[in-house]
Image (tube, rainbow, N blue to C red; front, side):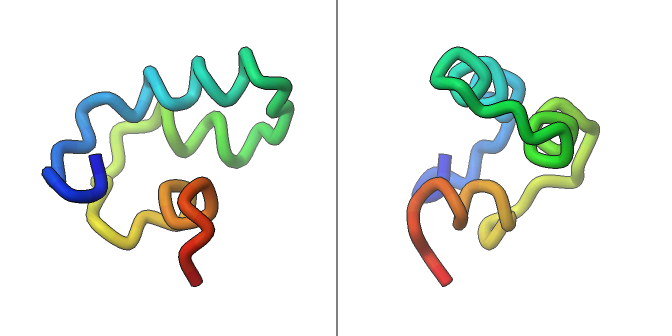
Length: 51
């Protein structure tokens, strides 16, 4: 997602995070929201450990 800049799978990321135990409504809602999602997205950066 980060390299290709294709953020269409953001809802899939939300499902994966939820399956892994994430219960943060802000993160899950952001991933499932309409966006726009761009490189530098705070959720993707958080998952990748970028600052």
